[in-house]
Image (cartoon, rainbow, N blue to C red; front, side, top):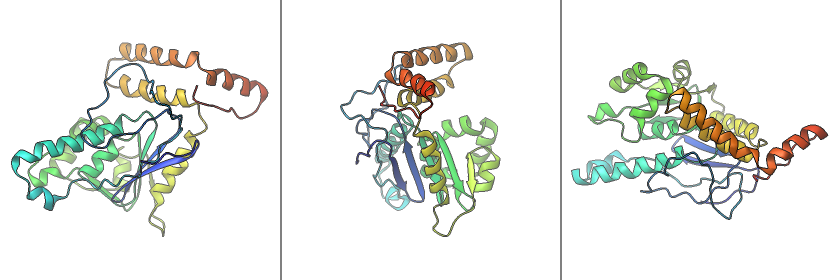
Length: 262
C-alpha cells in the first residue's frame, strides 16, 4: 500500500475492475485480509499521523480462483469466503469516496467488490453479474445485501436467481451503475471517467466529504427520523473545523479554498 501525495488519486486493480479512491481523509493503512469491519458509530474520526487526501490502493485482488476452490476441503471454504467478505467490507468502510471502474468482466466477487464502492461506472462492452447460483452457491461477499440496496429487492432477486450477466447499457438501465461509456481503443473508458469524477471530488472539504459519506451510509440503514439525527450529528462535526472557516473566507475573498482536513 503506497501513500499518494495530497490531491492525488488512488487505484486498485482487480481483473478488469479498477477502484478509484478519491479525496479527503486522514486514512491509515488498510488491512486486506481477515480484519473485522470497523465498529459502527456516528464518529468519522480516523486517528493516524498521516494526513492524506488519498491513499493509493495498489494491491492485486483478483477474487476467487474456481480451480483452486475445487481443491479445497469443505471445512476450508467458509473461512476463505469470510476473508473475501472482510476485504470487501474494508472497501465499503473506507472513509473516502470510492468509484468502481468496470472496463471488462465483473462477475461474482468482482461485482461484489464494485457494489461495495460508492459509485460505479462501466464501459458499454463490460459484463457484470452475480452468477453464483450457476455453481450451486450464493453470493458470499455481500452481494445478496448490497445488490437489493442498489437496484431494489425484486430485480435483485431476478438477477441472482437467473445468474444473468448484464452489459454496461443494461446495467445503467437498471440503476446498477451511474455512467456508461463507449469503450475506447485503450480499453480504459470507465477508468478515465472514474478519474474525472474523482477530480471533481478532490477540491471539496476533506472533513465534509468524510462525514457526508458517513451520514448517507448510516442514514440509509435506519428510518427517516433516526437518519435526520445522524445527519445532525455528522453536521456538528464540521462546525468547529478550520476548513469551514476557510471555506467562508475563500467565498468572501472570491478565491479557491485551501482545505487542510482540519
